[in-house]
Image (cartoon, rainbow, N blue to C red):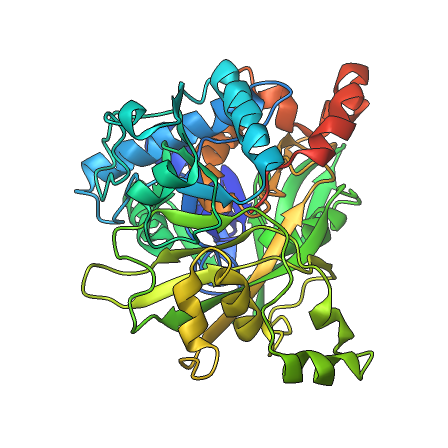
Length: 460
């Protein structure tokens, strides 16, 4: 008897699982099939910092409204599950030693406030920051939103004495934090299965159309070809979203960047266990000693280690109070490449990241000579040119895409899955839907703001 499905979702990463969850659990569509040749959540969904924020640039409110909705949904899941995925509201802390960047912090916060991220609170003296609480710990219900701007070394170091004495300003967006992406994804998958979603281990090989619309999908599974009839096909293939769209003759405007992270045993306790996500915003030169600089200068292959590195190195605690583990990420290369299942990892990444992190956390210099054994991992940011996602119909009737979620797939997954499920259901779309549709590039008004979007993606 041939298999039939109301919706077939290709890809069991966080985007595909969120789509299946919202279709089945929230929309009541029971006959959903989820297909992936790998176990769920194992290709790129487990490769991120697992953080979230509603702190996004304009020029319109699309990204902030989208992320606010996604955070609302994550908080609902945390509430109903007993916070099984350990969602917190510790915020992000961007620090700088540059007076010009401090002013940019203010401008960014004023823009974010105008677009719906919450109010800006300025603390420029010890007497003015009495109401500021730097630590929200693990209370995902914390009512504070918006951002706190700390101006002056004295104010910054009163609340964050462990960061560099060079920091003259810091901005602390508050509707932000992190969670266990694996636990959240598995919770949604379990709920989806209870509502009729089936998972098939296999690879989508072909999508058949008749009369210009999707009618069947061929899946290679356990040595046989399954032919699954369906009127709706969802491309949620993560790094391979472009390849899967190509099965329908559709070219998506996306590219992939390799990004890495390192997990380290911070046995010296340089990163406090109650810290927010810590980000050094300034460019820097790595702190090599004289002998190291002379050695690197001799070879073209190593001379780049002496050049200026971009801002953005960041870290956070990993695990509970009893853990010493931290995550460190720094996208100093942004290497564009065709995705492969096992990406090449830079053997120098851990040392570069640790040295870069010492700019905001001077205590990291204690690891220069005796670095703990790092755990290196990597995955892909699949992006559009302006770093906004693709969510909605593709040109072939009955085909849909949820992809190009860049480095924000975990935080965006719930609103993205809900949005795509609404497209498929034919329900009323939110105002931000048009900003993420494939058709947006044909809109003359949207094309006018593309340049600004490309310059201000606020990527981490």
